[in-house]
Image 1 (cartoon, one colour):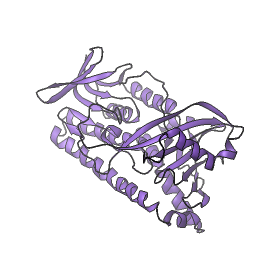
Image 2: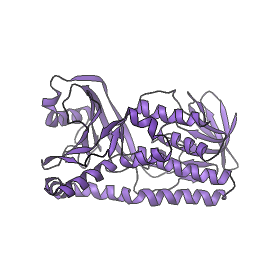
Image 3: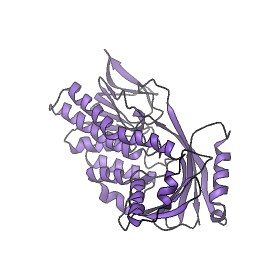
Image 4: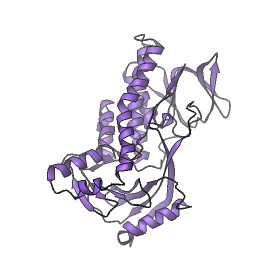
Length: 367
């Protein structure tokens, strides 16, 4: 089988790449994934304000909005115990959308634009000839050859070439029904047992929430479940009484960096978490995946439609990712240090309403 662009991984980054390519007039786009859809994905399912902007840019917000739970404010608990609900006003600043639904809708949008989808495609190795990527071979020896391969299969991708030691954030989460919460608010809880990261409560519907923590393995706790149990006991003990847990606890790693590099080689371009483009403080990755996917699609369209050389377009893609994401990556690193100071307590404890609203809006743009 042969196509013009082969996208490996049908999550938000890969789907956004495929949709953007099709909308740009590139035909012969094939999207593959190890799973069929719809499928579940362990994730907090938050779509930040920046992610919503990209979804609108792709022209598919009207199909995502009806299934999304709107968020207009945030409850923040600081490391020193300040506890405050911060409203960003009446406008929706973020949404919670189950990955099973969101990813499937993104995929369907691509298919409707002419993208071919092949499920159960377990990519094993690249096809490389004379130093150039020519396609992908599966574990059962199927092959798809392409003019370009987009690597969008996440943190554990075997198709990247950044050899730096990985920086990893861990998460563990669960789902409950019957937990009281303020409608349209998410909760972010900063606690010393997970510092400099946070725990959360995200409402997914009127009667269902997911609660989880983000943390680094610092040796204080030998097991993630032990750490999570301690967090739940400190912050949600009363509210979980009488609640019913839905399913099992689940977790996943998040790979991040402060310096983006190695995003392309001849015939290959890397997007999203495969390129370690996630926020180092909040763990946000869907926005970065989709935005880098749009940038990659625009670069590939320029090449395939003969508007730019491969070298020029790929260099431009890399620099666009660096310029767009590096400031927030560095700010995330600074945030990790600021959490050890009274700054967050001062902001959350502030009484000036415009300041409070601005703080809430900023948080929800990076949720």
